[in-house]
Length: 357
Image 1 (cartoon, rainbow, N blue to C red):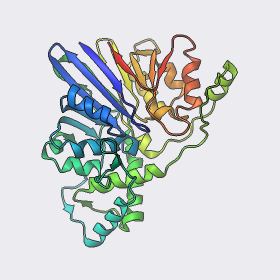
Image 2: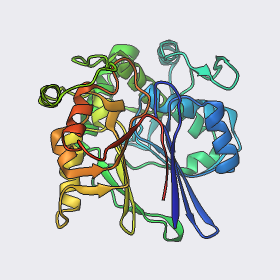
Image 3: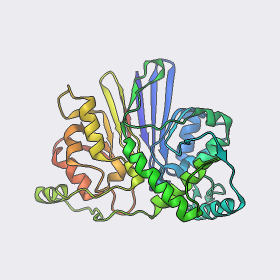
Image 4: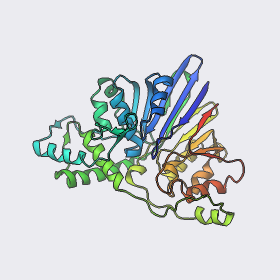
C-alpha cells in the first residue's frame, strides 16, 4: 500500500489531502479547505476524479470551511461517501419552522458572515452567505453521507476500505462540545432574541453561522511575528517555557485524528488542544515507548503559541512537521521552540508539503 499526503497554499487556512493506494484501489480523504484555489480544484478534478471517500471538517472556523463552501457550490455533482462534521445535533424530532421575525434575524446574521472570495473566478462568491451545512442538506447524496452523531475522542475507530488502515480519533472531548453548545445558546439569544428551548428546521445553518461569527471575533495574544534571525538555545528555552494560553471554544472542539497502517502513522491536529491530544495518545499507545514516531505531524492551529505543548512533543515525534497557512505571527516562536528543543538534529519543517511513502 502507498500513500500521498499533500497540503495546498490556500493563504490563511488548511487544505490537506491524503491519497491511499492499494493495487488498483484508492481511498480519497480531504481534510478542511480554507480557500478553493485552482490548484485544489485541479487536484480534486484530476487526481480524486471528483470523488471524495472521506470529507473531514475538523471544526467550524472560516479558514477551515470557506473553501469547502466554494467547492460544493461549484461542484454539485461531486460524489462524497462520508462526511464527518460536528455541527448542531438535534435533541428532538419535533422541529419548529422559522417565524417571520426569526427569518429576518437569521438573514441579518448571514450578513455578518466573512466575505468569501471565489479563487477560481477572482470575485466575491455569490454563495458567501450560505453555510456549509446548508449546502450539504440541499444535496440528497451529501445529506446521506453526513454522519450525524458527534465525533469525539471516544468515537470508534474507522476501518478504511480495502485494508488501507484506520482512522483513530483523539479529540474533541464531550466536555468541549458541551462548552460550544453553551456558547451557541448564548449567541442564539443575543443574535436572534429568543431563548433556545426548541429545535428548528435546518438549525444546523443557524448554528454554523453563529459559530463562524464568534470565531472570527476571537483573537489570541502573546504571539510575536517570526523573523529571519537565528535564535540561540537560550532564546529557544525562553519561548518554549512560556505558558499556554486558553484556546477558543471552537478550537477546543476541533477534531484531531491519526491515520495508521502497519507501522505508518500521520497525525492530523486540526486546531486541537495539545494537552487533550497528548493525553489521548498516551492512553492509546500506553504499551509503546515514547515518543511515538509518526511519518508526519500537522502542527495544530497553524503553529499558534497555545496549540503546541511540551507534553505533546514528548509524546509525538516525527522528522516531518508541516504548518498550514496562518495569519500574522504564525507559526509562532513558542510553537517552533517547543518542537525544536527536542529536535535540534534531523528536523524537517515545511509550510507546504508533499509526502509519499
